[in-house]
Length: 147
Image (tube, rainbow, N blue to C red; front, side, top):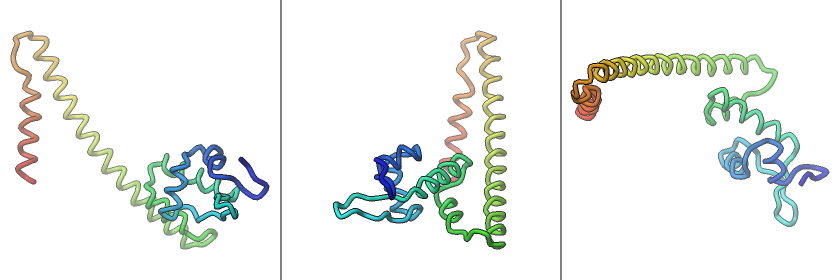
């Protein structure tokens, strides 16, 4: 229900397209400030809370973690150092993404090689045991020994 001076949590969740549990969790970790309460104990959220929730959701869609988002919302607006902090955060995120892409490309190459081997064996129809399973088992054994 929308009130004259704010929202109850259910309406806020609906407007921001998040769950009530999400709102409570964001309050708990400090991404949202604690709302005012009526004498009955009901929380009353300001309309600006919707903007904060939408910002958080959009930042998550860009791949930012909640801790990174918390860092972003702590930045002061209209401050030169904010731009420097943002530059640093985005540079770190981009470097992390590049590393993840490289890892995924390596993984894709391994899977492509395995698939080629499977296709070759199936085309020969020799009834040979699939060597890919052995390779995966060997890789897992080597990984366990390193740990």
